[in-house]
Image (cartoon, rainbow, N blue to C red; front, side, top):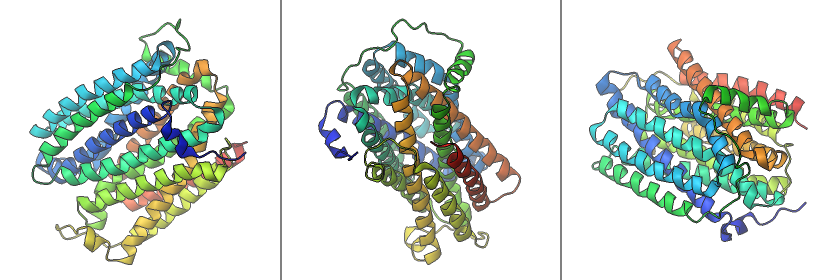
Length: 426
């Protein structure tokens, strides 16, 4: 099977508005989160007497919690109602949430910012099943690898740009005003883009909604478990988010406490990681030639593991004794530091090759009537693994492990995951 020109999808109304909606939403999420994390790490945490490493992990858990609580409900809504209209409602909610973020930035209140972060997570929870279940309604099967690759590429390109601008803007003179203005404007632009997504037919209009999210969450996972290939693919996706969350949450404190660098270097780490995933995701269509296959998944997981081990070794150095941090130019002046960037890019590029086939696989194997439920199950498992990442990392830090050793633990666990995937993949 020959791969189609994936960029031709940008000229279609059935793809481009959804891509823009996702891109702007992911950009805004990461623009806000990056600004907030930098504000916490370099300003708020010290003033409030908090350990920035722990506080950043708490922030990660707060953002993830709504995925665990509301994914089942989100899946039900996506199956019962017309999906493009629901996307518009989630984007309107984003405007309201970002307006609250403006207040949190101005008063620099960590508690209010955490509430906003939780609401952002809730908004993203309801958008997730819509995004991935509407895609196979608008694309042909032989376009799913290309479409998912572009969505992932756009997502991590938006993470890249959002992270850069958020991290570098907030601590500058007038940064709070600039960030506060942009988060609302970008949310409004995302709503405008969502209004151009073509309508779809509800797949289960007679579905009865339930308010018991605990029971519904258990039920939605139980429905997917018997479908072995789909469920194992979901676990594979969740492991990617475990690894990604571990790295992304540690970069600010890794830069400050291990490298002795400022927010510019922390932003460079985040940007390199995001760029690698985006390029790896986009390369999938060429590697697999448009065919939905999991053949490269275990090898990509193994490559992630090896790159993590290399990152551990190039991160070993003497403890930081000076309170002064180095900037971007000083960081880039040593070979050891450049090796860090190479390792981060290798980890993330392998991650892009790893995750896109898994998303396309579950979309192609799931019935249309249960697609949103499968995606909701994936969100539940993703959130569970991300919470495990946040909790596990916090425990290891509390036990005295340094961040490079946390990367090493992640590498060892990913090797185990690669072996399991290799034995179970078909």
